[in-house]
Image (cartoon, rainbow, N blue to C red):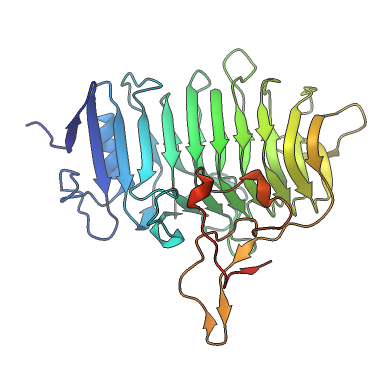
Length: 357
């Protein structure tokens, strides 16, 4: 029996799977009017087909709980212009978008490794040419557990774009958070917000020893308890620009053998304890010496960043987050860089009642 998934006919045969954690049912076919309930079921459907794509998994607003690792590991021949896309039904640049429209992914995955240090993976991407867009990822509340929201093991994989997503680590409320960790080539993290995450992004290794084609741009990192960015064996073609890094312990961590001179341009990097350090999975070695340098251009290191927080009125906190929640407050340091969820600056609306931190 052929599984109906809601097809759209274009030049290539497009496939769309709809996921709704509130009204969906995993026995449904995944059409817009009969969505499935879980991301795990979406992965089963995607992995079970052989067409080359493109494939789009649409996540409805609401909470999507992942209680066991979900792996997208299809052998389908996705291409740069025929991708696997996992995205919100309403994206941040839509005029009707609000923070409440972002689908929330909450992980309760049981960690593996040892009793004292567990590692829990939520979504594994084991296929090339993938986009994850417009999703709000929360941490994992399990004790002594490192949580990875998006993880890629394959050292021969390429082209993973994570864009317009928000990652909330929870500070003292949740355990260790390393939202994005990927082997392979072409990990691009674009227009994302990381708030109170221990290590927002780890650019890991690749087949042949050096990972190429990576980027981190137009991102906001506030409160990285370990390091805002970690590069292992990452090539010097790494793009790092239009980012705001603030309140982080280290701005940049690297493998001890990594002597690469990275270019940093058009950024604001303030209120962090150390600029650069080295470390491994087992321990942080400490700050780097004068032999490790960066090629910097138009990098501001003085001043403080003010982020938009929920509106406060005499009646109390607003039930609706301002549209530019956790973005840099308009007219303050860094607001001209375009960092944050909005790729189209015209879509960013002013919120007169918003407060800042």
